[in-house]
Length: 337
Image 1: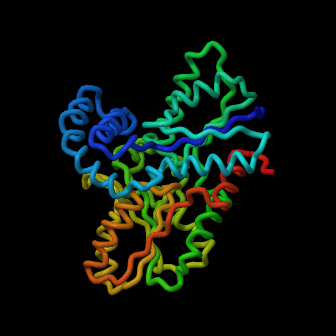
Image 2: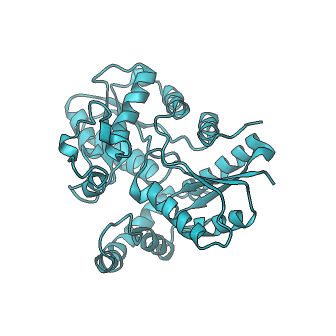
């Protein structure tokens, strides 16, 4: 056993694409007060009486499209990522994978790791940008569990790493495999969030007046929107892209009061402007999942090509690529063999 333990945490996935398993996953995920930040009773009614009953069957159909012979790509890629990092770090650090919602559950993994009495436990959510509903939720659960333990384990939390050179390098390398120069436009698509959640980080400044589309503002350190625009700028600079050949958008919205511009609308605008070949990348997703493979790779591809575009190419996520494992090791301060 190494002296350190690293727990990599992603959102989670249903145990299967069956409606019952999808319903269970959605209920647990959406019941998190950091995901739907409404009073308890309002959240309970919204999730259990409105969202889950109406979304479970449709979501199950989408998960059936996503599922492979190996299972859910999100879980498969996590398992492969853990295996590669274990081989690369050897005895210097023990690496574990966990899901905030679903299996292997963060509660079970953290409890087993904490019981092993490591000198240090590193919690690294697989979200490059901090958001209360993702990284914040992971850290809150770990702190709540640790607080109940007789021996509180030594913890180190990693909040975000979107600006780390190794992370930018990993995405630049990934995109170069798709030859950005042969495309008319490169669209960076990030997972959307409700505006009210983003503005809680800087209540004195609204998203409409913060200026983060042009540069990182002073109040933007933990602003998800500002971090996404900064990620786009950093990757574009690393690739040497010219202004006007790339842009930023936000996907997976539930209402119009989410971060914009919306990915699907931007794609329609690009098609209307005569852009025939578009390369799309999703830097907020470090592993392939429903939102990348199905939403971007199938649904938005059909939308763009049906509107007159010729080709929408999805750059896959980092998954367990060598550049990504290098970035994780550097971010966590691990020694590789």
